[in-house]
Length: 181
Image 1 (cartoon, rainbow, N blue to C red):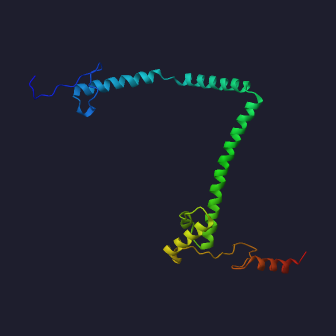
Image 2 (image 1 turned 180 degrees about the vertical axis):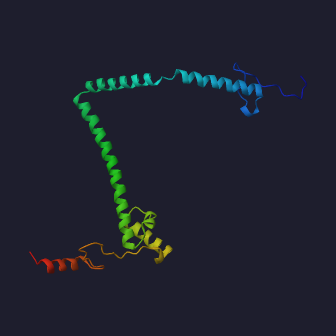
Image 3 (image 1 turned 90 degrees about the vertical axis):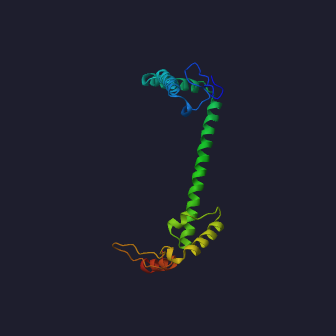
């Protein structure tokens, strides 16, 4: 070989060079590379269990779990139940915290006259932080962007609710109509 020509890469037992990227291999080496990997995946696929075998394995797993459970002492069963209950309680606390924060955000948004979309953007972990952020948001977007917070009377028969009345006014109307007990 002449001195200027690079030496060809060493070919492994599968017919392609190990340290060469596929894009830089010759077409014969690429064919050998893909043939080897194709056969490897074919063997993997053939060795996998079929659906009947999977069903049988799942049934045996369920049987083993029953046997293991029957061998547990009362104390171990109690520990297992306690761990499951603690996990459920932790998940419930996280969910309750989410709901409480959502309620607080919506309460502040209602007080500040923000829309629900604006309420979703409020940031903060305390009531004071959320109120400050609501004030800033209201200042940034102006009063034109906030929702109409006046309440509309319900429609339908027997509707005698007046807009803008307080609870005390409603109590007085009730006493006027029905007397005091």
